[in-house]
Each structure stands twice: as C-alpha cells, then as structure tokens.
Image 1 (cartoon, helix red, strand yellow):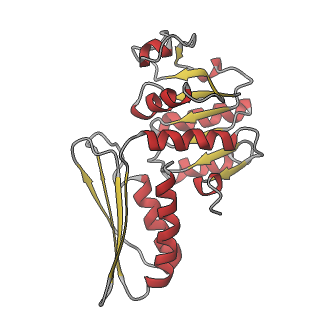
Image 2 (cartoon, helix red, strand yellow):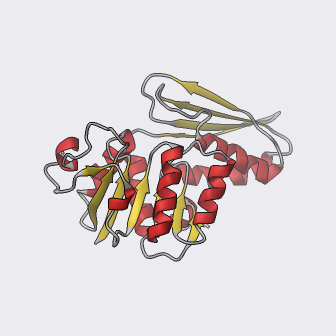
Length: 247
C-alpha cells in the first residue's frame, strides 16, 4: 500500500487525484492539505469531495503529515509548493510536483532538494504530452534548420501562468534540439483543460504535432503513476520520461 498526501486537495487537480486514488487498490490517502483559512480545513476530506467519509481531516500545516508517508503529491501555487518541498526534505518524504510557474530560484530549490529526496517534477503528467515532448525533440533535430517553428497552447481562463509550463518545456526542448528560440502563442478561453501544438512549417511541407486533454483525469492518473515510481526511489530529480521509461 502506498500512503500518499495530497497538497491542494480541494483544487481542480487535487480533487481528481483523490478521486482516482480511492478507486486504486494500492493507494491510501493519509494526508490532505489546503491553504490556511480554506473552508474545508478540519472537515473529513471524503465528505468535502463527495467520496464518502475517509477518516482523514483536511489540514493546513505539513508538520501534521504522518512521518511514514510514502509520497506527497503537490498541485498548488508555486510559493506554497516550495514550502512543501522544504518540509518534505526535512521529513525525508518523496514528492511528485505538478505545479508550474516557478522562477529560476524556485527551480533551483527543487533541484537542490532532489539531492536529498526523490522528486518527480513535470509541468505535465499526461502520458501523451510526454510522448509529444519526445516527438518534438526528434522533429526539431531533423527539421529545425530548414523549417520555421511555432508553438501554441490554449487553457481555461483561470490558469495563473502564461505561457503554460508545458509550452515553455516544448520551447526549451526545441532550443536544445536545434538552437532556435521560439515564441509561444498563449490563449485563455472558457474552461479548456489544455491543448498544445507545435507546427514545423517548411517550403514544401508542414508537420503538426498536437495534444488535447479531454479530462483532468489524464493528469491525475499520471500523478499517481509518478507516485508509484517515486515511492522508495533513491534521491534524484526525475521526469515523467523516467516514469514512463522513455529515457
């Protein structure tokens, strides 16, 4: 049994992670965390999320997380995530981080923490998106010199960071593969869960690689897969490519 804690448990992603976890036989939710002052604090997380009573109260402080927890899954804002990283390091708890919007100092904090605990850190936990990363890397290395490259992404109007962490990762992959700096067209509309596309436009042909998320469950399932991977793993900074065996 993998004993997990979920940071941001009442958010869009935390809710879906909890919903999938209670259906999996190898997971047990032993800690549920939310921001200080959240109306769910002190209530049974199962009652709050409509999952039936689970006997776990929503808490606001990491110090109350059980010492023998196997992994903390974090989908919060960047500032809160970094505080959770520090506390997980202090308690030797593996982490899965799906939070985006970190500045360079925040990313350095995560890298330093990974020297002491295992951390799976990815801007996107979807299996298809991580295959997209691999396809884009290959396409950019072959087509990059002679093709113009454009990246676009569309998300719901509530998303805090723009461009998305996934789009920034795609641009970074292209830069590493062919040396080109590419801009990102970011669109915010409605309740779009997440769409990302890359267009390689040449004189005689066009190659387009695109991913569309139909449900947030695709990210939640990936986060649980990452938690399985991180639990009991030696310290290090891992990506979903490691989790999926793409490296």
